[in-house]
Length: 168
Image (cartoon, rainbow, N blue to C red; front, side, top):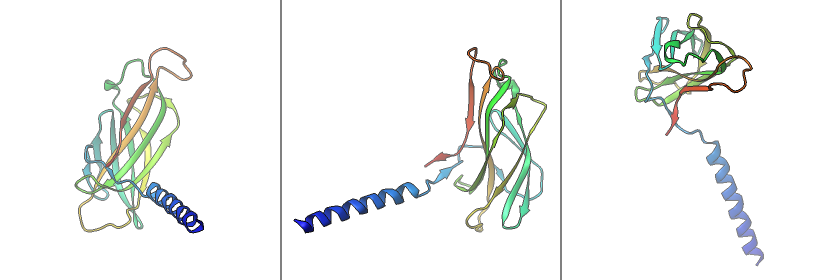
C-alpha cells in the first residue's frame, strides 16, 4: 500500500514537472504572413504595413542588430473620428526567409494625438541566439487602439488594428 502511494506521488510530481517544462518552452513564432525586407546594414529602408509605414536603418551594435527609425500612421485608412492613440506597441522581428522568428524586441509608447505628419521614433536591439549563414529579414508588428479623443467616454470606437507574429 505504501509503495502504491509513493508511486502515485512520483507520477504526480513527474506530471507537474512535465507541465511546468512544457509551459516554459518557447512557442515557435512566424511572420511569414507579413511583409518583410532583406537584412542589410546602414541602408535606409521603408516597410509599408496595412496601417503604418516604418522607415528605418539597421546599425551594428556589438553582437546585436540595432534598428532605429520612425513609424507613420496611414491616416487615410483610419476612421475620421479616430483622433487619439490610446494604446500603441511596436515589435521588430528578425526572421529567416520562411518567416521563422529568430529574435524580437518590443516597445510600448505613451498615448498621443493621431498625426499623419509626425512620426513616432523607435529603437530596437535584436540578438538572435546564433546568427547562422542563411539570409535574414526584418519586419515590424504593431498593435494600436484609437479613440475619438483623450478621456472621451462613449461615442464612436475604439478602433483596433494589429499586425503581429503568430504562433505555430
